Image (cartoon, rainbow, N blue to C red; front, side, top):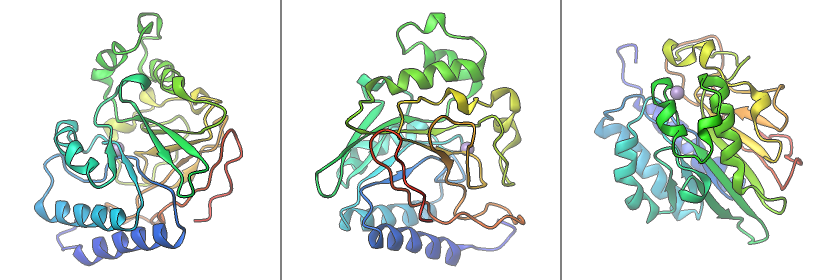
Amino acid sequence: MAGRPRTDEFAAVLDAVVRIAREEQVDCLLLSGDIYEHRTSSPEADQFLFATLVRLHREGIPVVAIPGNHESPERWRALAPLLAEIGVRVVSEVRPPGAGGTVEIRSRDGSETAVVACLPFVAERHFSSAAALFAGADRWDRDYAHGMGNLIAAMAGLFRPDRVNILMAHLHTEGALLGGGESEITVDDACAVPPARFPASASYVALGHIHRPQALPRSPVPARYAGSILQRIRTHHPPARPLCEGCGPQHDARTPRW
Ligand SMILES: [Mn+2]
């Protein structure tokens, strides 16, 4: 990080996440990947993250998390049962909706249930093994971007009209504007999924990977990259604020308040 410690910045931004989640009385916090910078995380980074997750748990705020390309799915898999004890649901690898790929969250007042279909980062070289988990994948397009479109459609299998249906994914999309600091190999346009392939049955699509916060106008449903709340490198783009989004069943996602 440009040769200087950023401990104060980490502390401040994570404080802001907890404060906003508490003030807005959110029903759930979605972590859409690349929570860490490195696959082998430092004890300091662990300390920050785990303390934040415990604070969220004490506030009664459940968390759903997926790994990005900067993280080890194996490490998240090992942590998952421990984190589940404090209300953090981790989907460490791609799994079909009926086999652990979705997480259900009840709203605070018990009046609504969200189905969060979780799609961790899939490297191009691993696409065929991820696809092989799904019935009928032998008929899918073998091209990564379009094959991922089929996989995304399959992830929406448990979406229902009376639920808040959320797709959370860590991937590159066609037309996304980079924020600076992304790893070039993972933002290759050949691997950019067309937003038109997002399921029309989704209430909202929560995306990670691209550092610049943005909505995707070519998606049939509200879809948004949260962006980096702490920039990896200095850019002329302001960092994202923690994204606080309201959404209900079907397409009535409300305007983001942050
Ligand atoms: Mn990423």
